[in-house]
Amino acid sequence: MLPIRTVFYPTDFSEQAEPAFEFACALARDYGARMVIAHVSPPLIQVVGDGGFVNYPVGNIDTLMERLKTVRPADSRIAVEYKLVEGDAADEITRMAGEAKADVIVMGTHGRGGLSRLLLGSVAESVMRLSTCPVLTVKTPLAAAPDAPPAKPSRVDVSIE
Image (cartoon, rainbow, N blue to C red; front, side, top):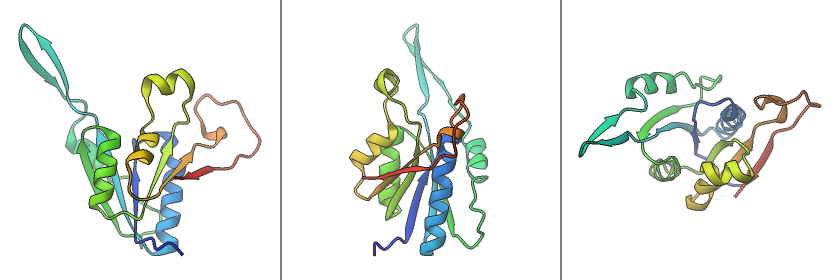
């Protein structure tokens, strides 16, 4: 059996991340593991004007940490640690997971394909390529996807790389 002592759950606070959170909580509960819940804020946007740089903050760190701490497992016996950093999502997720000695990363995927994936990239795919531990991606069930037509009862699609 694969020993799971630390479950690393990165979130972007989207609705698509919720099924992954439920899965991560179940793993942590069933294995008696601790959870590390993390968010990566995009870096400051720098605008050049008249030879100078102006930094525009993307989010207030204190506000983001408050929001992050609202992401809590229903089972209060699960030990939780929170991490908030600024930077490239895939790079920071894999770095933090390594520092936390994560046994598995559980993350949601937006399920983009085609042109939108090409233009926007896939954080989950990049994490799978960069990570040294298993990565479990949880695709949002069709019924929970935004603007999705009503569907038959769905299942959660999970892939482990």
